[in-house]
Length: 213
Image (cartoon, rainbow, N blue to C red; front, side):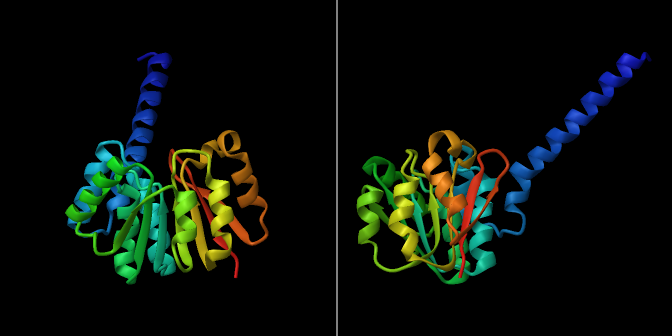
């Protein structure tokens, strides 16, 4: 066997191992330790059809369970995948979730998914513009997730900043693109002395900004 052939086989083996690790992180590990349930079945279906990646959903779940959060706000419901990950965690902590979606047809599909997942008792779905609806939602939050699909995160953060409990978290999806799409939001979460921000995720990163006590 020539040296070139040996190197080729080595590269193929390394590439295969790397692909296996990536598949494990994206497809297997996010569901580790979770009991089968109607909600988990719906989440798997939604991810397979373009919903939030399971690795990102598990990140939301772990933040809520690990910190014992009880009041969640999901901005940009889509068909309910992120809301269901949050709801599964909030079920364990005895909490509740408000989720806001601007498009009525999309919101109706999400509502059906919440029913199928048996989470409609825990999730309150509001059909509205988040900028208009957030001020109408009473009380404080300890966990907020933003994935509205348009560059409104800074405006939403401004509306919510004083209503995040100390120790609470604001998370936002697609953080790897913020420097181009939402530089004002990126500047806010990385330079605000009240927020401690990190970035997590495999592909579509999530910003995690914890409000200091």
